[in-house]
Amino acid sequence: MNWEKLTFSYTKTNTIILSHYKNGEWGPLESRRDDNISISALSASLHYGIQAFEGLKAYRGKDEKIRLFRPYENAKRLRRSADYLGIASPDQDMFVEACKRVVLENIEFLPPYEYRASMYIRPFVIGVGAQIDLVSPNEVLFIVAAIPIGSFTGSINRPAKVLLAQDHDRAAPMGTGSYKLGGNYAAAIVAGVNAKKEGYSSVLYLDSSKREYIDEFSSSNFFAIKGNSYITPDSESVLPSITNNSLMQLAKDDGMSIERRRIKLEELETFEEVGACGTAIVILPVSRIDDKLNNKSYMIGDPVTTGKMCLFLYKKLTGIQFGEEKDIHNWCLAVEK
Ligand code: PLP
Ligand code: COI
Image (cartoon, rainbow, N blue to C red; front, side):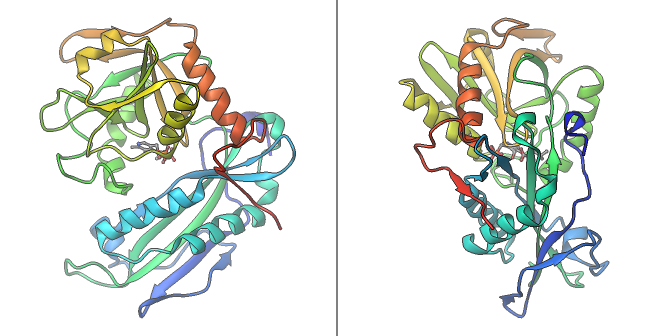
């Protein structure tokens, strides 16, 4: 592997892990060398978007230990998404066992510590079995893949500009925004690709009922720093991010106050730092948000130097993930043979 050239793109690894839910029970976890699967062309995942996914990472630490970051939280969130769709999902132990196994079976794809890259783990459930009617399928595949990855977009050292969504929303009010379902991403992919062509790192969404309050980015949560406060949106439509939850705890540990509340768009002008956070993106500092509809740009902090809290939180979080910092909250789970 050319570790230096890793990006957020797919590399075929040794195996995927798969289990089939049928007749009311999960089959054993199987390792498959082939990442092509055979399912009915009439599967509800293909027609009605009956699928949910997760994303977490495995890290090779400074001490050579392999760590998963808060995998039980991903297991719970996958169940929450699957419950929304009315389909079966693995229990937490099965989920974590599959994640550990996919790491071990693909261990040579786990980047060495010094590259500060990681292995992205993608667990998902899809509704399978032939059907045409609108009911939750009672046959499901649970699959976990592991892919070595580098940076998703941008870098902690380079404040980015983002675009405010102008002509579409990603999630309806009281819709699926807080669930990790493919449809949310389908709604935002073209806008994201177009924004990138214009030099933007991401798209920021407002609440879709009034377009007054900040929700989140297409694939990450929003947070801001003002004085001694870490501020993040309280919204029914954003994904409950495990990274954001961890950053809130780290900010609290550092004596900051946490404000989880509605954030008006105009409040952007008052923030000292803004960041996008998530598993793939980690923390992306944001120094400019363009609202093209209103011909307005919000400038936050220094355009070339990352703000000190973004940097501090990034170092703390990744320090725990790479075994450099004490894991006082017991977030990491060791993966051992
Ligand atoms: N929001 C959205 C829409 C996402 O896709 C993600 C990525 O998973 C996040 C937030 C961040 O969530 P997490 O920190 O659990 O990865
Ligand atoms: C993640 O951060 O894990 C995500 O799911 C982002 C992904 C959709 C690219």
